[in-house]
Length: 179
Length: 101
Image (tube, rainbow over the protein chains, first blue to last red):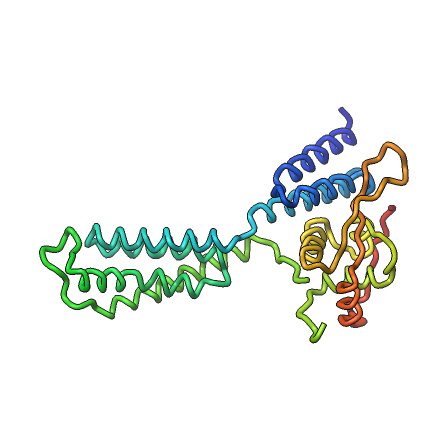
């Protein structure tokens, strides 16, 4: 195979992949990008075009959707609550808070503050629930004393982790042009 | 359009090209060549303009037989109004790349 035919094969493969990755409702755009390849030319230009199209398809596929963030936020809060209820190891709960905040911050950078506040306040919410319901975590022998508002300080590490996640996602994702 | 929107330089460049050729259907590669934008920047922008009703897209038969149809683009009346409203400043003037079509 010559270099030229290798390039064409690679470009064709990348474009097929891009079309395949496009969400169903945007498949037409993938085909539109693919059909332009003939006009772009061979060599590095064609390859650059194909890589850009592939990136477009990946970005469209991974574009954050509100329901996805809300679902992940609910899972994050549930996980923090679960570990807070099941263990009295503060480091475990703190680790879950940091991890959940980091992931959620990366998932929806613009809502990192919401992530930090809600994930950070979960421990206090669990304490409050225990107090109001009369239930208590399995590692406690009696209902808790009044919920301790100082646990709200956990919002600070949660906010920091969410901001780090948001920053990391900004580094990885290219800037989306604003129409 | 009541007030000027926060429009990126890339979008301004694309709008400027359309404004120069308001009646023509323009193709992706042509737009890429005229604006200097790569496909990874251009297409998400076109998709968003289309989604917002500012751009219309149409499949057009290729001029040479045996070639696949091409997606052509032109501004809708709303898009044309936005292009008029957001006249690019001189420093955003287009810098076409010297590449063969």
